Amino acid sequence: MNISIFDLSIYIKFFVGLCALVNPIGMIPIFTTMTNHQSMIERQKTNLMANFSASLILIISLFFGSNILNIFGISINSFRIAGGILIISIAFSMITGEFIKNIKKDKDQKKEKIDNISVVPLAMPLIAGPGAISSTIVWSTYHSTWINFFGCSLVIILFSFICWLCFQAAPYFVQILGQTGINIITRIMGLLLMSLGIEFIGAGISAIFPGFLN
Image (cartoon, rainbow, N blue to C red):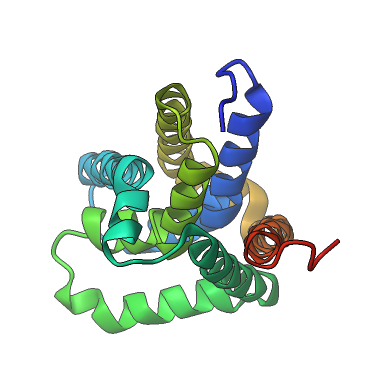
């Protein structure tokens, strides 16, 4: 699909989708909790390494994700449906509040075993998780020209920068928003995410069964 890089709606939708999937503001209390034993300098290094690693993972998924699917003989339409179901399941857990609870539970169980949390679990799977990777691969198949790959790469870098800013300001966000405000934002992001997942499923079904949704 040849779309000009100046069609900003593509990149805005991609950016909003990543924000809804990852929910950087909703991750702030998780980041704060995971790094509360670190000094300010260590926390900044963890933040930088986590977002650099996440952006690298997503850019690799953008450029090579569809090729990996071809190796395993998976059609992109099937992947769209599977990715949409995964996104909807994540969105549902965000709306019900189970998403953050499960992450905190896993973190508490592994707290004594974690030496370097910047790559695992912060970069993956919290930032560049299955939902974000699936979404990136799906977008790469929708807009598969090199100029669009370049534009989407810039979006990924911008998104990582936004995550970095949010984590840098983590102590201030927690004080200003409080847990209630963060919960509200998480649920709004969940609704946006569920809508995105439904679109992925609809596109996959309409491609596999032409006219089924008309």
